[in-house]
Image 1 (spheres, helix red, strand yellow):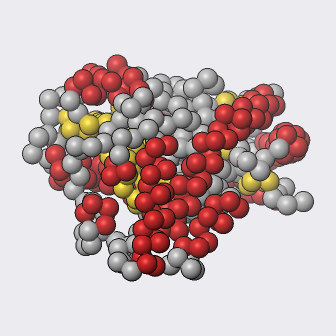
Image 2 (cartoon, rainbow, N blue to C red):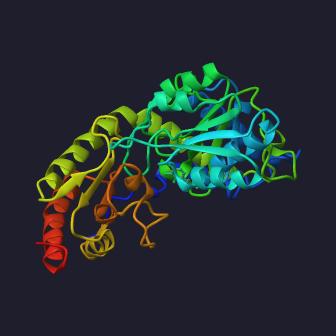
Length: 385
Ligand SMILES: *Cc1c(COP(=O)(O)O)cnc(C)c1O
């Protein structure tokens, strides 16, 4: 039996159609998109078409509002540092939440050594940010608010449109990390009331190492990477044309299939949650309604997430405990702790994120295997009984 991959929030496989669309840009159309001869123009056409697709899919106004980056982490860094440095003379206060991805939290924290002030908003027990808390945290010197669209560990979807309205009325800029929602929710930058939005191709069946930052017209950004005039001087470096073409193809496909696929995944997700809930001393994490269609996150009391993962691996199941960035360390997830879970319970967390290749048979297999493993690990645990 092959591996059952249930870690789609960590990364996804490149779709065949995406790989096909990318191929010519490695070989026959390999030119530098800044060159004036035909080979360069061919690459430029691929790049321009990809930018057009992406700005339209995001509901943006113009192609220039898209800056291509090396992924979600760079897009988040560019949004936060770029705005911070460009608007430092206006104010130095930034607001974010306690459950952001490290690419947002660490970036915002890093800025505090240069005199920027940071407010990190708490979340409730479901991982939701309260828009009224955002309203009360805004100050005259607030230049930027960054709240993620949906959380990568627990799948909770934030009221971004509502928060955006509050932030806009106040006159600050609003960024959202939409890396987990691109391809799975409808992204419209106007409906979401955002000024900046990050996406990453490898989370929606595109290639790794490529992403984009949407930047609303009129928003100033200090670049992170200096050099050539690419991306209207906001991000130097020869464009990753193949990757960018792959990202546009992947986003277009995901958008077309979104409704049908998300309904299918929701069914599998709910079956999985229901089945796992039967195991005694189990807690489902996150909000059951405002939730990504592919996310399951549970804590099994009295066991360690790490041993659970190793045992699942032996049964051919690829899953995660907390996020990929923190597994390997012994710290429990900062997201679960922010939701008020104790260290002991947070240690026994399991994240299963479904995707295109998963079937109902996979879910049934999991529901057969997980209870057995949990029972066996508990029998060996000194914490149990
Ligand atoms: C994966 C992820 C990132 C980082 O994106 P990379 O392309 O891997 O750098 C940022 N934010 C969220 C919510 C993610 O899930």
